[in-house]
Length: 78
Image (cartoon, rainbow, N blue to C red; front, side, top):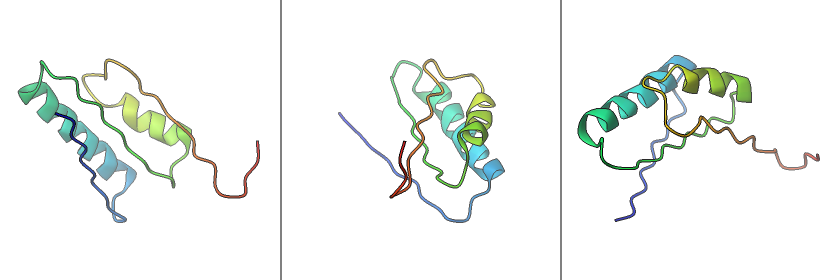
């Protein structure tokens, strides 16, 4: 079954985002070891380097990634 869950907040700090992602990872490791689960996080206010730092701190590391996509703001070129 395909499932997509979205969590959204305007009140989280970088540390809060890291804690949230780590708690999802902990749950995944404890309860769903035999399942492929893909986690996506979007934080437009963070730079690619900041997001990379957060993702690299998640333990155990993800099998694939982290992969970071940079979104261009409307009107940006190149």
